[in-house]
Image (cartoon, rainbow, N blue to C red):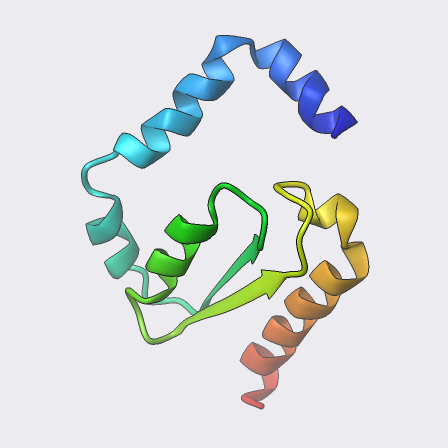
Length: 98
């Protein structure tokens, strides 16, 4: 939370403008559909991006969706072991095919 707060204070209103622009981008779905690389989508159950991430995960068959146990948008800080385990599993699967 501290890192987020400091980043927000430095960015001021530019932070929210960039965040809103992401959701207002009219070509986001088309852009996501063009991704051919294996893609891991990770989100926390309490993150405001949960619904958008779930929707994005349905756009391509090779998108891998993983959900962290809750806490908000700071999953990497709140659940570092789970986050790393999910990421390592995805990378290992891509490297070994298992």
